[in-house]
Amino acid sequence: MATIVTSPSETKPGQPANPARLYGYIAEFETPGDLMAAAEKVRDAGYKYWDCHTPFPVHGLDKAMGIKRTILPVLVFFAGATGTAAAFALQTFTNSLGWTIWAGVWVTGYPFLISGKPAMSLPAFIPVMFELTILFSALACVKLMFLFNGLPWLYHPLFKSNRFRRATNDRFFISIEARDPKFLPKKTEEFLKSLDPNAVEAVED
Image 1: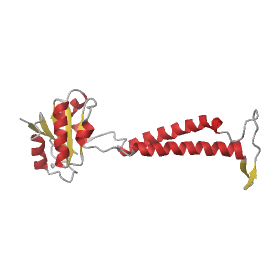
Image 2 (image 1 turned 60 degrees about the vertical axis):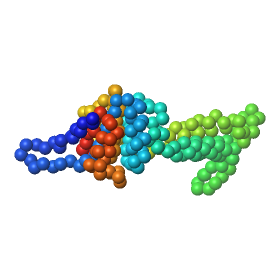
Image 3 (image 1 turned 180 degrees about the vertical axis):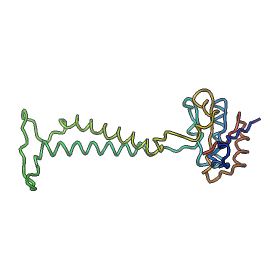
């Protein structure tokens, strides 16, 4: 039987009550199997703004949640290709063409002839092209990952829940946000209770 725990609003004595806005509900589960089964039901119910919280990676959870593949690898590929093209263009400009701007006019420079090597040498360009490919890919991956995840976010309403602290230890949680189009406080609460969790808790924003 699921228990319901509601987080009370904090008000100072002598001040009128100012109820906080509801962030959503969390449901606590004991095992990864229970979480997986519940996640599939939440997915099938059509909720959009919800998440699973686990102390360690659970294999297959993304499929149970219905998470689609991210476009991040495609964007990182194009970032790497940009680095490759930039490195090739830079080396071609500096080592092969020898063009530069002097007094506002494009003038011919003096490419160096080193050990009889050709000025346009793709094998010689490979190390720099490789390095810029990795650099552009790594920077794009990190920055886009932060952007897609809405980070940095140093505080989250779920941190108000003492029960939720066990999400980093030995408990598994599902959270459904109040901004979800299908979210109705009473119906969502009853739906989470039907998943047979240890507890369901309301979390304030």
